[in-house]
Length: 375
Image 1 (tube, rainbow, N blue to C red):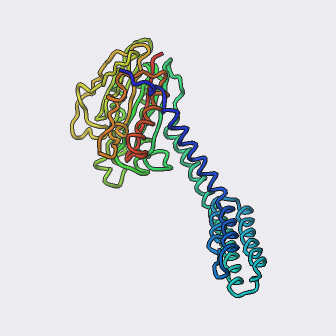
Image 2: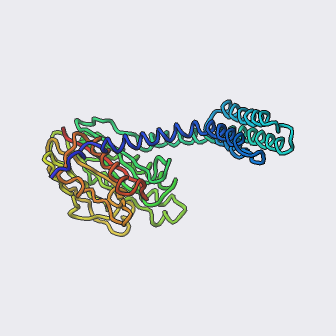
Image 3: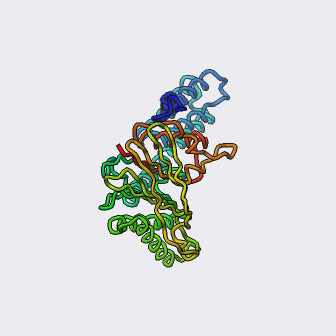
C-alpha cells in the first residue's frame, strides 16, 4: 500500500525543525563575542581583585575573527580593550602590574584576531574561486538536462559522497535523437580526476553516438570502443583494469516502449501510475564498458512496455548500496513499491532525502539519479 505523506518530498516538519535549529545556532554564534565581553566585565567587577577576565575578553576577539568582517573584528577587539580598562578604572587598579599585563594580553589578542580575519577572508576567497571552477566543470561535464526532452518529463540529480565535491565517477546524460530519446547512467571505476576524465570521455562518446547510431546496441558498441581507447592512454593501473558500468535506454518517438542495454549496472526501475513497480533486470547480463577484451558478444536491447504516466528511474549503486548504522543496504525497489509521484523531480527529491536518512546523513559513494516520465 502507498506510504501516506512520503510521495512528494521530505516531511516538511523535519526540514522546518532542522532549519530553525540552524538559524538559532547562527544567531547565537553571531552575538557570542558581545556576550563574552559582557561576561568578562561582570566577572572582573563582581569577583575579588586577584581574579581577571582576560580569557573571556581575548576569546571575544578571537571568536569574532572568522565570523565578522575586518571592521567588525577590529571593533570587537577595541571594545574588549575598552571594557577591560573601564572595569580596572572603576576598581582603581588600572596602574597595577597585573592590570597592565591583562590589557596588553587583550590588545595582543585583538591584533591577532585582525590578522586571522585577513587570512580567513583570503582563504574563503580562494575556496569560493575553487567552488566556482568546480561548478563550471560540473556544468560542462554533467549539464543539467532540460525538464522536457522529446515530449518526456526529465529530472537528474548528482549527490556527491565527499562534502563540497561536485562531480566524481558517476555520470548521466539525456539526448534527443532521430531514433528517440536516449539516456545513459554509468559509474566509472576509481576516484579523482582520472574518473572525471573518463566520465567526460563516456558522455562525449554517448552524445555523438546517440545522434549517429541507428540502434541502441550500436551506441553501446561506440562507448565500448571509446573506453578501450581511453584505457590505452592512461599511465596507471586503470590502463589495464579501467571499466565503467552503464545502462543505456532508448524511448522511441510515438511508441510506448523502452529499450534497455545493461552493461553490468544496477537495473532500472519502472514505476506505473497505480504504484506497481517493475525491476528491469537484464535477461542477458553483459560485461561493463571497457572490458570487451575479456569476452566479445553482441549487445541485445531488451524491450519493455512504457505506458503513459509511467516513470523510468536509472541510478548508480550509490543509491542501492547506501548502508545504515547496522550495515543494511537501502532497497529502492522495496521503498518505492506501491507509491506514486507527481513528477520525476519529486521522485528524486524523495529518494535523496530517504538515502540521507537511511545512512545517517552521509554516504560512502556518489549517487547519480535520472528519472523520465511519459506524460
